[in-house]
Length: 144
Image 1 (tube, one colour):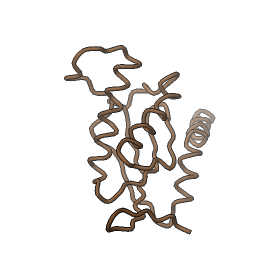
Image 2 (cartoon, one colour; image 1 turned 135 degrees about the vertical axis):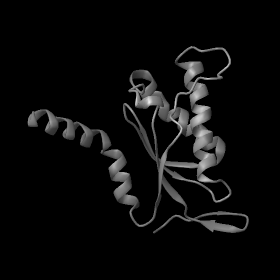
Image 3 (cartoon, rainbow, N blue to C red; image 1 turned 90 degrees about the horizontal axis):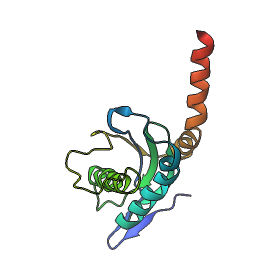
Image 4 (cartoon, rainbow, N blue to C red; image 1 turned 30 degrees about the vertical axis):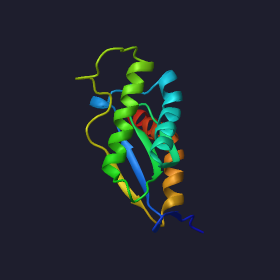
């Protein structure tokens, strides 16, 4: 059964699979940052009124399953998450205390798809992303 959400004059079931990457696809999500980035994004989602249903931080990208209320656009929500998380990452982990002009952690673009009947498949995909990537690397190495 779907868990419909509601606001004053609307009932909605708006789920999105969102993927975004660090600038230049550098493998900058590692170590302590990789462990804590989930908490950063979870806090930002809570502040915005967005529900983070599933999420996983890979070395070079982030997968999230979000339920975004219809009063927010996907573009504004992703922009908010990327902007505010970049500020916190620079402040807390990269020890930058000055103005953030010209400092970008995330790449400009992102990937988004709506989630309909495939929700369980997308949840499994997000959970198993790292295992699948390691399997593909092993296949490539054994093929050499």
